[in-house]
Structure formats: structure tokens, C-alpha cells
Amino acid sequence: MTTPTPKPTSRQKLLDAALRVVREQGYSATTVDDLCRAAGVTKGAFFHHFATKDELAVAAADYWSEMTGGFFADAPYHQHEDPLDRVLGYIEFRKQILQGRVADFTCLVGTMVQETYDSHPAIRDACDRSISSHAEKVEVDIAEAMRRHKINADWTAKSLALHTQAVLQGAFILAKAKGGPDIAAQSAEHLRRYIELLFGRSQKGDANV
Amino acid sequence: MTTPTPKPTSRQKLLDAALRVVREQGYSATTVDDLCRAAGVTKGAFFHHFATKDELAVAAADYWSEMTGGFFADAPYHQHEDPLDRVLGYIEFRKQILQGRVADFTCLVGTMVQETYDSHPAIRDACDRSISSHAEKVEVDIAEAMRRHKINADWTAKSLALHTQAVLQGAFILAKAKGGPDIAAQSAEHLRRYIELLFGRSQKGDANV
DNA sequence: GGAAGCATACCGACCGGTTGGTATGTGTCA
DNA sequence: TGACACATACCAACCGGTCGGTATGCTTCC
Image (cartoon, each protein chain N blue to C red):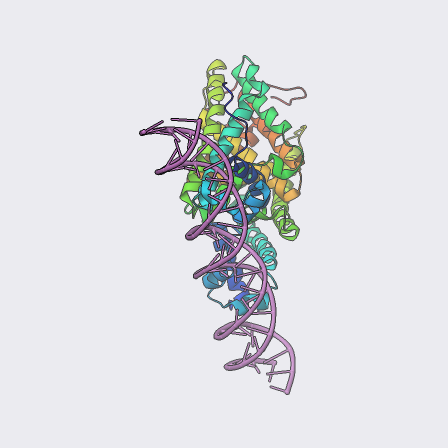
């Protein structure tokens, strides 16, 4: 009874299709007909639920926030008691999901904002909300880790949280250019090492002074 | 006599226009007519020099490599004797040019590869060439810095060089989402601090063991 | 030197297919 | 019975690309 209704409506199917197709083709290159075909619905259904293609883009960005929010909330790294372990666990988790087809592990809103930032403010804002709200969850653990480990730094938890997102978004671009996730995983390792160095946590085989 | 001829041909004007317009609108959203209008040439001229729109994209990526290659070759950071200073100077230089309109400081090939990696292999390869050849120049200084400062690490000069490009590309995405360069500059600072920590070079107000 | 012969650079009207979007019909369920 | 959730048919603008034609050289041969 708490479950609303698992029946997949046309709207739902279109949003799921948008996540797949836009990450493969980009936003501009994805046509309304592409989305209808991938979702198995007709154009009438599309424009019944969304007044314009841009309106679907905004809804897709919000849907993406919802999906990824649940996905990361369920991830195991939250179990760690030390907030620094949670931050490092988050990076490790992000690294581990860099697998398979490029379109499957890259970010919808990172892709969309590149094409729309200058001409579609509503879509850009939706993408910004998605990235920023995710970064804020990382920021909470970083801030707590700074308190716990008595870090007095000239950088803020917020800037480091956004930096983690920058590294990941950039890693996606390299993965697209090189056709696979390997290089992206190496960037994630550099990011993990950076945070370990910031918090003075050494790892095996570390080369210090 | 060494100067060939500074006369701007239609081909040249179209490539210059592509750098501007594609960085603003993205590749798919940019029409051939858009490019012709921006370049002040006709459609006939466009298809005289490029068989297809995709062929222009490849030429524009190569042209971008050429332009940025010259731009960074002339930059002042190469003067430093210590290769580590050159690497840090490079990062600082990249940070300093994060100014003005977003379309003016972001990367053509990073934008294009997002839209084309899955469907236009020739364009993706051209973008990869551009990113990788630039990274290789950074890699040379990093490798020399590792030798000079006797760094025995579990990371390679190549992976760190590509990581610098990932950070910058990701910073561009955040700049687009947030509508300005401020957040990108903060990521560049994190990158600089990471390299300083890797090489054990402390800065003022540093909190070390 | 000058005319023939040809290549390059460019023009802009045009074409067929595609695109986002609309108008209208139809089945279903409260 | 009427509102909702679609399906079908259609439209006008737009898009990448084509095509016939022109203007301006540059070469070659007499």
C-alpha cells in the first residue's frame, strides 16, 4: 500500500528512454521521435505529457536527480563511522561503477548542460540543481571529516565537494574521448589520493619526503 | 617572404566561426547556415571546402589543436628551470585564463566529444588526438619533475597529465552549470595543491604532519 | 604577349527528408 | 458522460546537401 503503482506509464517510459538515449546521442541530436521509439510510445503520448522537448529535458534532469539520489543513498559507504572513511568510500564507489558501456556510467546532466548552458536557462538550472544537490551530500561528510580530523585549511568543504564532481565529470569526457572507462578510473584514484593527502592519511607504498 | 599571406580565406573564416559558435551552442545544435552566417560566407563556400558538416568538425578539432598548441607554447611558464615549477606554472596559467564569457574559456573538443563519441568516430578520434597531444606536453614536464625530485610513486606521469585535463574539462562543465568561471578556478586550485602535495612542496599556511 | 584551356574559389536557388509541434479521433474508466 | 490517456494524421519550418553557373586566376604554347 505504500508502493504507489509500479505500472509503467508513458511518461515514465519516456523519462527512462531519455536517460538512455540522451546519454548516447546528446540532447540536440536526440529527436522526439527517437525518444518515442525508444520508449515504445507515440508522439501523441509525448506531447500529452510534455508541452515541449525542453520541458522533457527539465523533467529528465529532475528524474536523474531522483534516481541517482536513491542509488547513492543505498550505497554501502554510508556505514563507516568515520566521516573521512565515508568520503573515501564514496570516491571508491564512484570508481567501481566505472564499468561497461560509456553511455551507462556517464552523467545525463553533465552531458545536457554542455549543450544548453547558453541557450536554455531552464535546462541549465535543472542540471545545476542536480549536480549541486549531489555535491551537497558529499559536502556534509567532508565538513564532518574536517571537524573530526581537526583540519584547518584554506579550502572549504564546499569547494572540495564540487571539485570531486568536476573530477568525475572530466573523467567522463576522457572516457568518451578514449572509448572506455580505464582512464576515468585513474582520475578517480588521483582524486582519492588527493583527499588522503589533504587529511594526512597515508597509504601503503607511500613516498613521502 | 616567410610570411605566407594573412589573407583570410573562406575556409579560415569558417574554422574561426566554428570555434566560436560550436563552443556556444554545441555541435549538433549548430547548423551549417549558422556557421556560414557567423563566418560571412555562403553555403556554396562551405561545401566547396568541406564535403560534409562532420568533415568540418574534424578540421575544426585539428585547427583547435594547432591554435591551443601555439597559445600554450608561447606562455611564460616554460621559462622556469625546475620542471616542477613549469608544471605548477601551467596549472596557474590555466587558472588565470578562466575569465570572461564561459564560451570563451571552455574547450571545443571537450564539448564536441560529448555529443559525438558514440556516433561519429572520426570526430571522436580528432578530439582524442587534441586532448592527448596536449596532455603529452604536460607529461614531459611531469616526468622530468619526477626524476629531478626523485619521486618513486605508484602513479605515472601520463596518468597525472591526463588527470590535469580531466580536472579542467570537469571544471568547464561546472562553470557552464553555474554560469561563471569562479567554481572552475577553485578546482584548478585543488589541482595545484594536489601536485604540490605529491611532490612534497609545501605552501604558506600549510598544515603538514 | 595573348589567347586557349583548365583549375580553384565561390555563389545562392533549390530539393527531399526531417523536425518539433498541432489537430483531432478513440478507447477506457470513474 | 466526461475527463484522462493515449493514437493517428498531418503541417510548416528547417536542415544538410546538391547543382548549375560565374569570376578569377595560372599555365602552356604559338
